[in-house]
Image 1 (tube, rainbow, N blue to C red):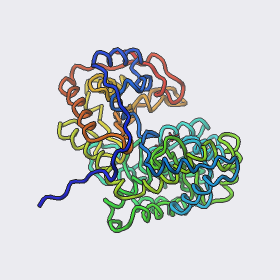
Image 2: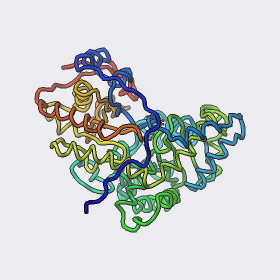
Image 3: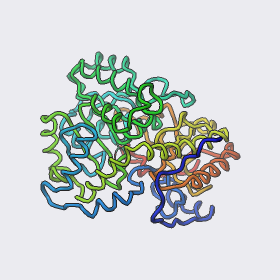
Length: 458
Ligand SMILES: *Cc1c(COP(=O)(O)O)cnc(C)c1O
């Protein structure tokens, strides 16, 4: 008897038709967009794997929760329900609502980070790095060395190397380090998870030096799934038990609810310290809104609470992460190099290995993203030299160790048939990979240039 195949623990109640352009039409569209995939109209994209952020499909429970939204300015029932869910599920007594994840970073960092500070962590997400550097502080990447090798098949490549962390603390001193940020899962590092053992070890180092440990928690539930399925001792624990334990080692968290809360917009900060909460409160009122809505409507907060309960169910996570693995396995079968193992939310194609003839400062991952759109109408995103920005001091290009095209899968949106189209598109490019040339930047913004840069073909 073979094992029963898995299928999604949901069925489809509403659909959204998508348009399919011809290859010629797509070629014209990407030229008009000056080779930046962010400039495309979404309706000209067939399968949109630009991001899994805010692009998920809400459940009927979430939609019905929206009807209960309380839009009171202060003390709404929606906020109290969201806060109760966060406190019960994640264990933090203080909750600051914000309109999305980067807003949570802006508020928390305004209260805690000053010029000259050092913020160690695993690989910081781009908005996190942006908000740190904007304050003339320096993010330090202490990820384990193994993470830089895309071929190494290890279970927890998002881990922080505690020796690097200790060395960083010794070098700069505790007074310069307002927090350590552990990103779970590590988006920049390939959607790679962090083990509970590493969380405990990092927490011990931080607390030995009285440095707060903050989780950048966008995909905390996916991280918990990997702990359950890959780390000894957790196989019989529920996702909710694992999540509770993970956060018990942290002092606070920032959250982009557009990811693992499966809503279209929203975020929050959650904290153990009342003092830090009070400092954040002032900035939240200035930047986001009053303390019981912070840029969200009441109905968003209700959908957020319902989404957190759903994303921490094993069956949901199993279906989601199995789909990512399906895509990763199919691409690997073609001999196309990806970051191994496949991440929780995305497959990262290794563009340096795909196009060895294109130097990194000619943006091979951007070239691959453009090619995949032209061939199959699929939109991915560059996680490479363009995203890395120039060094804020020297203004030199700083090509990262890995040059990747990220194919991020929205939650509960596409079927595996869509994944087969993505694989087919990559196969077309792979067959003529030697014919591709690099790109040159025409325009770039001084910070977070990837969103607005324009390019020309070399
Ligand atoms: C998306 C994301 C953010 C920023 O959140 P937004 O909601 O997009 O502002 C921060 N950190 C990580 C790890 C993320 O994935």
